[in-house]
Amino acid sequence: MENNLLLEIITPNGQIFSGKVKDVLLPGEEGEFGVLPEHVSLFTLLSGGVIEFTKENGNVDAVVVSSGNVTVADGSVIALVEGAVALEGRGEGDIATALDSVKELLKDVADNQTILASVEAKLS
Amino acid sequence: MANLKDISRQIKSVKNTQKTTKAMKLVSSAKLRRTQQLSDQARSYAVKISEVLSTISKKIAEVQDTENISRAFIQNDNPKVVDIVFVTADKGLCGGFNMATIKSVSALKAKYEEQGATVRLRAAGRKGIDFFNFQGEELLQREVGLTSAPTYEKASEFIDSVVEDFNNEQTDKVILVYNGFLNMLTQELKVKELLPINFESVSLDNSESMLDIEPDDDGEVLNELTEKYVDFNMYYSLIDSLAAEHSARMQAMDNATNNAKDKVNSLTVEFNKARQAAITTELIEIISGVEAMK
Image 1 (tube, rainbow over the protein chains, first blue to last red):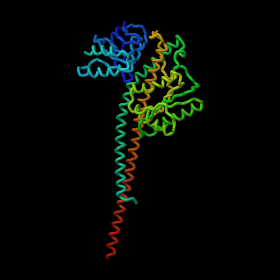
Image 2 (image 1 turned 90 degrees about the horizontal axis):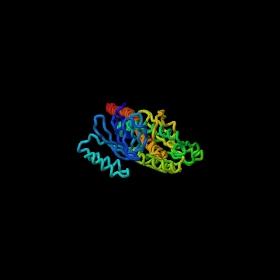
Image 3 (image 1 turned 30 degrees about the vertical axis):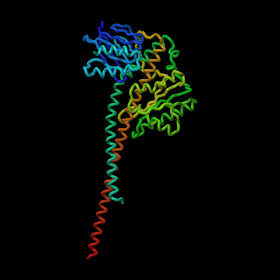
Image 4 (image 1 turned 180 degrees about the horizontal axis):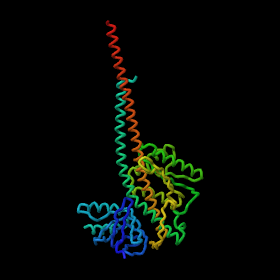
């Protein structure tokens, strides 16, 4: 049994993330949901929010996305989103810039205050 | 014979023009590289969104008639109102780049009007707007500045009202016309039927896996996907057109630089001839003066 999922996060401005992950948490239009290996094939729309995933080495990473859609099939999770900001690997100085781009990204998303708060919590 | 001073002034001015055109060529080639990067980055999204749209719409069509849910999938051979969205550059000096698009838009417009349809024009790019304004044609939508610095957000804003009109049944067909990048030397005029979506233009995916679709409202899913597909196509056409514009300008400026070089050469020959004539005249004058004194 395959223990990993292939996660791809793609925006019109390029690929944000591509790699093997152990699990993914996605902000679906009808609520947040998690995907583990051997998940049933699924297509759904995404609302703005945070995609969280555990990488092979056990590190948890997060990418903030605006609206889009996701296809789960045959061990791969492909998220097509309009815009995305990765939160990984940022130093102290970059956090402010990251927050600004997140705010810019989510300004059209309803209920963005909750998402922003959770992003801020993750960053600090 | 032209005066020496005049010729040297002309040479100087042509040389200056040459410097400008050379610089413009270099600027365009740098910009082209950046635009091509954008287009490379967009490519993987392009492939995936087409795949997803065709898979999902086929899945939904298996369960129920797609055509009942969304207008975007019904082919309409006899449209009443046609929207032509076209992309030109904001700036000139790029050879026949803008004119090719404008000509094709005019031809399309004439063709549909002959069939009795109303044609509405929506323009992105100053050159196209100026042309149709001068002709006294009405433009439904005009956008300057979008084509020289395209972003996904701006593209989707621009195309939003088009999709809205289509969904409200105010238009029956949306056609996108732009001049796309083929290679460094050639541009390719692209005419694409944006809505209704033509399935032959969407790549077909034969995977027959079971797929759950959420939310259950198929119409909502299809509308959302269609909108994304159209938004993205608009964005991609803008990048493609920008790349083509830069390559066309590079070529035009390269030609201009070469022409300036030829012009400088022929002017120099003329200058030398004039100088030699002046010297000869002077010599003859001196010699005949000496002869007269004998």
